[in-house]
Image 1 (tube, helix red, strand yellow):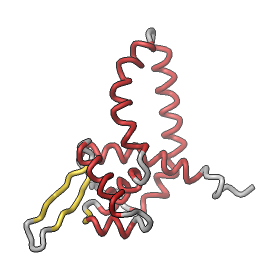
Image 2 (spheres, rainbow, N blue to C red; image 1 turned 60 degrees about the horizontal axis):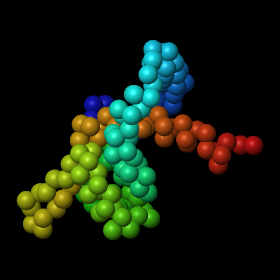
Image 3 (cartoon, rainbow, N blue to C red; image 1 turned 120 degrees about the vertical axis):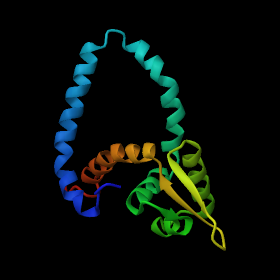
Image 4 (tube, helix red, strand yellow; image 1 turned 90 degrees about the vertical axis):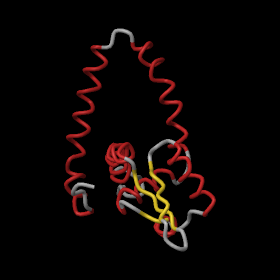
Length: 147
């Protein structure tokens, strides 16, 4: 992935207010321009219904973040990064993400056969949209905010 490294987190955190402001301005403009909001909601509902199971599953976002930072990972790499995930859950989530074209499953022809996973272009775009949400949650977590 082009140049996104762990050291860029500070800059990303600093951008959160700008991102929030841009999103707010865009949403306000969209609402003003929207004459028939109900039609639009009905139009997008099938997509939202289709994508929501991806994010309802425990560990799904965690797997996406691991693949984003590692770029390419084997099953055991992901399992080590997510210490408490069991193998069955990891397998199920990887299958779902592959089925939804968010990740690629790559079978290597070495002996023993090894399988690695990486984000698709769609998955990369998706995770870049989710990163500000993650930082917002981290920055506003009741556990992190001192009373």
